[in-house]
Image (cartoon, rainbow, N blue to C red; front, side, top):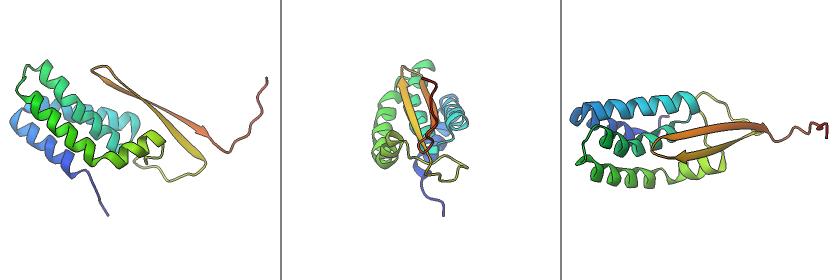
Length: 130
C-alpha cells in the first residue's frame, strides 16, 4: 500500500544524473533528516529546499531557477503533509499511532534546516513540585 514519494525520488534521481555532486548532497540531506526526525515528508521537503543551497555551494547558479520551480511544485503537492507537520500529527516511519502522544516541530531555516522534535504525554497528569 505504498503511496507517495515518487516525485521527490524521481527528482533526486534526475539530479544525480545531471549534477551528481548536488544530487548526492541532496540525498545525504534527505537521509540525515530522515534519520533524525524519522518523517519522510519532512525529509523530502528539506531535501528539495537544499537544492538551491547546494547549487550555490557547488557554483551551479543555473540550477537555482529549476530548484525554485521544483520546490514550489513539491511543496504544493505536499500541502496536506505540511498541515500535518504543523499540527504535529504527521506519522513517523516505524512508529505506531498513539493517541496519547503529540509531536511538536520547530523548523528554522537559515540556509541549513534544523528540525527539533519534542514528545510529550497529553494524558499524563503528573503533579509538579511547584
